[in-house]
Length: 351
Length: 257
Image (tube, rainbow over the protein chains, first blue to last red):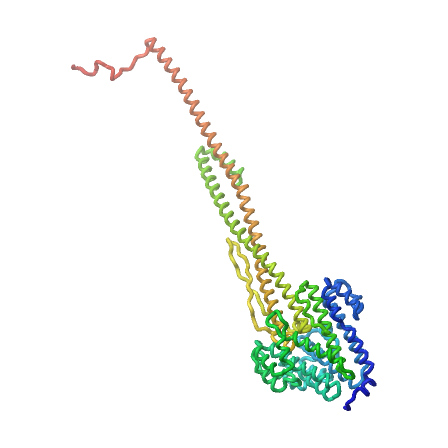
């Protein structure tokens, strides 16, 4: 690709970039969060949200207002915006959008496979699928009896097919633990996404590749942390690490051998980016957990993505920030509805 | 036997057979009274033991319920935390349900003759959700599992306590009813019957006494009359005194002196 995206980026994608920047400007600010934290009931939360960009999205809801209703409505709004962006996009931005939806598609496929195995009615499962991960062959899932049939008949058409082929042969699809399958799919997806961004070059690669590297390393750390004390063997664990991050290859090998948190921390100390993150982790229940620290760093990187122009990273960053905002609002709403306000300030602020 | 039947029988039989039967009835009644009193004491002891256990269980229930409130709140909050970090895992969990991991055994406990059911939980099988949240939120999920496990254990205990509470309540009511029945109905009845028998006996005795007295009087009058007659005849010289063996100076039968 030629360098100098500023010459021709706006021809195809300028409108959408402007739109997404406008959307980003209407994310909730610190002042909004302070207002929300001081609400006493969910009705107050609804009133406060009316003053923001959310507007009257809860206007048609019947009483009583629950946290899950708020969550569903916010997700619908995000989907509407995302679909709008996607429908108006041209290549290669549309491929970029497809890559973004792959992660939701992976979750949906795992859900569908599980449901098909247990002969649950398809309608039920479809209702629980993530709307962003919708693909056309979803309803056809119930014709398959076993996972390999499912793959041959249905999934071959979806963008997820290459990821399945990466992980395994069709025979092993049946015995594999669902969680391991999910993580393996996600690993191939991440690596494919990374390759796509790198090949695209230009500002997009400059912005997206660090973000994706961080995501890969973060997954490696979290998988290691969560597999202490489970029956997951070290070799299995190593196959789940995405290789597109900074930790590849030495860090991943060291991580695979780690037995507890301190050994993990020592691996992280070799890398300048991760050392301060691990130092910020508090001990026990008082301080932040590793996941909180990672979330904060992710939000930071996404916000910084908006400092450059003429790249696709703004769309990715916007979607992730919006999701984090949704999680924050749901967290605050739960704390309010359960009257458990001690940890109400542990949302991740988006500055 | 009903009271009236007893009284009727005593009257009839007493009339027919005299005092003996009454005395027998009295001893029978006394024995029954003793039996009723002993029964009442035993039942009262049983009722007291049950009430004591009842109060203990009540106290424990209150404690456990308060603790339950706290634990459930904690568990619901950890669910919110886990959802914040790990996203929505509820469908994954629901899809993968097959066998129960925590099961309950019912045992029996005996308090003063009342059997109370006691539930005890035990773990079976491995955790099929070990790898859920492997990529996100695993720590929060582990905390969530612990919190809800604690809540389940507490619920099992609470269930045990509440069934014992209800069973004991029933048993105490029945026992108390029996105690009251004996104390206020049976014993007074027996006592009244006993009192009646005693009055009957007294009356018969008095009748006897009166009869005896009357007979004595009559005899006395007869005696006086016959004495007066005798005096009169003696005075008239018609009566021959029979020989007094001791007062005699001369013994006729002695031929030679």
